[in-house]
Image 1 (cartoon, rainbow, N blue to C red):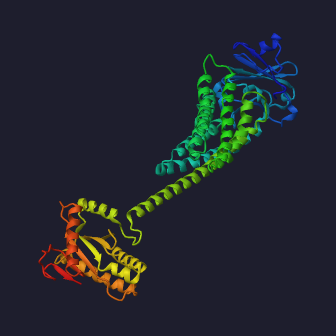
Image 2 (cartoon, rainbow, N blue to C red):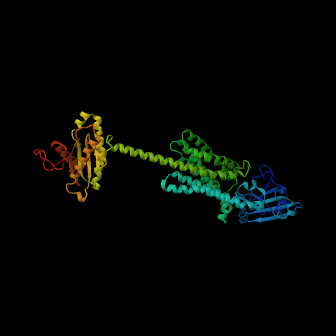
Image 3 (cartoon, rainbow, N blue to C red):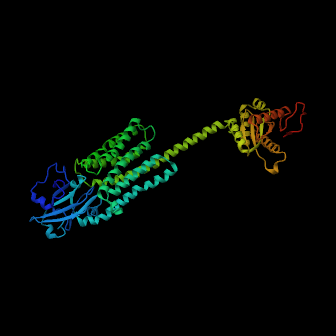
Length: 552
């Protein structure tokens, strides 16, 4: 009815009869929405032929409305009137934020055919759309639509809220902060849909229309603010230039700032505030569009989810902004498109969040794997895959705290240089690898600490094996090493034997002290003919096989 309606302002005490008899003309020009109030009158022709039989209601945007009046003027000048309190206007809500007030006399077919004009009085209207979106509709038809449309909006709210549960669940485990901002976006989306669709009146029947209007506006402002910060946190590091990050943040905060400054419902409120409010979204939309292209050029993968989710919203939102600024009337059905794209965006970004989490976890696992590999490289001997000296020293320090090992044994391969000279270095390396593999399979801590020298930290012995411990263990180890080299390196004709120096680890001895003692006893073993274990200090005059030695 926007092309056919006319408006007029009056004081609060002016009645419909007084208005009609005053002869004051209605404004039907392009300036007809520039009303001054406090009571605004809207005159529309009653187009009975365009509406099905039955009661006819007048509909319009219910944001911020209070008391209203609906009057019907018959062909003989008779005035039929209905007065509606604020609660009655609230109770008449229709899905998608409209009121539906019956026109008096339209329930009687004879009277309905005689209605010529309809006058609507609004007290202290807050938005121009309460006038510009006025239309006539069948009450019975909209009574039938109310339940299915309400169910549809409830389903949309439920679909939008599902990723919220997903986000909160995984945030507790993963702690990615972009999930919180996405959750705030979802909350704002659900809040706006729940409020603007009219579902809020089912949950909160006492809600007034001004509070509902403010809730609508604040939810959108918070949603854009959260969306801007989500964009900054969600896109991979380095894909948005620093100056662009600052621009995204400032433009995302602009609607919140403007909402706080201009949407104050007091004596200073002006219907122009709605224009400022809607205009504050435009910079954010433009910056986000630029940021999408910017991130794509820099190779961002995450931004494609925002492109898919936000481009449809931006298109519908730009239309909504233009209509909110009263640049044109447009089709109210486009609001349904905005609702659906808001929900679609929530689902798409939920998939984007899942994808981003997967990639972050993959990067984290790759980083951990690299750290493990670097640690292994730093702690492992490259030839034998045994622990190296660095790892051995760290294990010894740990033992000083936990006392897992009772003795240190140092092994040396007898006449290893002769093996290299006679059979070649490749065979010598094979011997080292075979010895390393065999030592690694034992329950003690083994390390390669020199060319052909190996160290073995021997675990504390069981009570039943304390006699001659750990010499009996070392004898078994040496026998196993000799057999293993013989079996796996058949190129060597003679037996490869081992000399061993053994030292006890006490609580107060340092690694240097224990190593020196074991090394001295290894020297004694080699000096006394090799192929033996020495666990006591020998004097220089000791015979070839004194007490305290064992040959294998």
